[in-house]
Length: 252
Image (cartoon, rainbow, N blue to C red; front, side, top):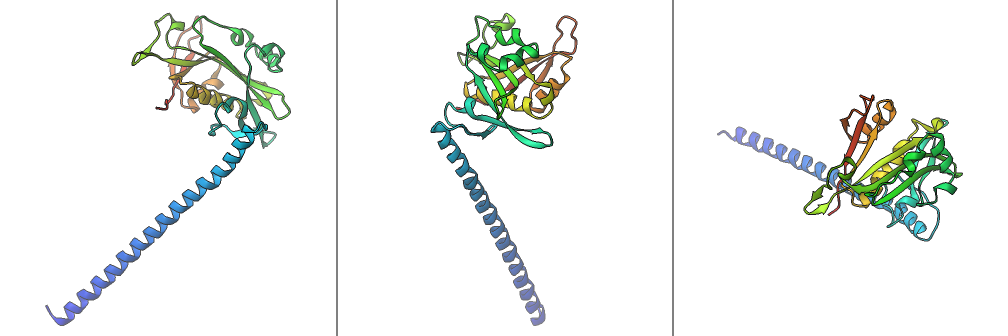
């Protein structure tokens, strides 16, 4: 090897080393910035959530985004959605109507208007609990509702209860669901369904299940967008109705 070739190889190796070092340093800096930015984002987003939770625990009426980590026992009082109305985003509250309070609650008129009274009042011996969520505007006007029951999986189809590792598996079955006509396709139904999903998961349900007739294509689209599986079923003359099922991830 000539002296010139040796010198050339050294220069090439030195340049290559500098390039590798620069690339490694750039990646380290980029990775560090990404990590720090992520941590700062979590901290900045957590602070308002903690303040809001503290205000809620003190008894204030506060608003949470749907799906947020709410204080213990607070999901039903404080779950909130942001929906479209008149070209702008407005807040709606999702609250639970206490058992037995339907007769004196403003949502009753909407339940009657949408022809869901029988399904809101229906009960069976195997129902473990019943819940009615109402979507209301900030001035307290009901614009939607969703009623579900917690029950063992199986008895409502004439089958024995399903068990998992010796424990009876439960589900949240949606029996009644409706949104006032002027508020449809604005996110109210989605907010209600997400509130039910959150509550059902908190209560340890294995799944959510509901039936929708073939005439209710809007509800079909909503359920599919939320990730529900679909099982077509024939009921009397309805050949396009479906059961919708959403398995829930249970906390260990």
